[in-house]
Length: 70
Image 1 (cartoon, rainbow, N blue to C red):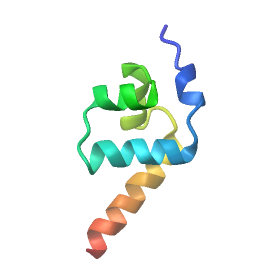
Image 2 (cartoon, helix red, strand yellow):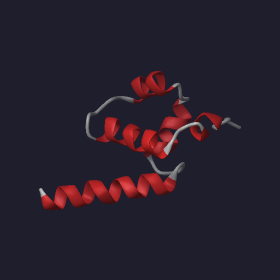
Image 3 (tube, rainbow, N blue to C red):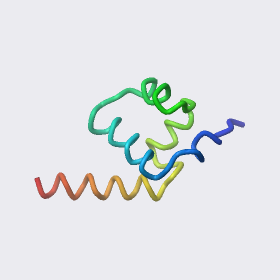
């Protein structure tokens, strides 16, 4: 079992920033792992909404709104 205690240290702002860096700026997972000291599994869980789901859903709703109003 993988320990994802590294996710617990992240604030909601950190999670939104991770999502922004990956989805908008295109930073690959390995750079996010290094920048935020996270495991690959933790980054993958955040990026697909399996962890910090409320942040993920909020981010996706904002991104959708911005695309629709652009």
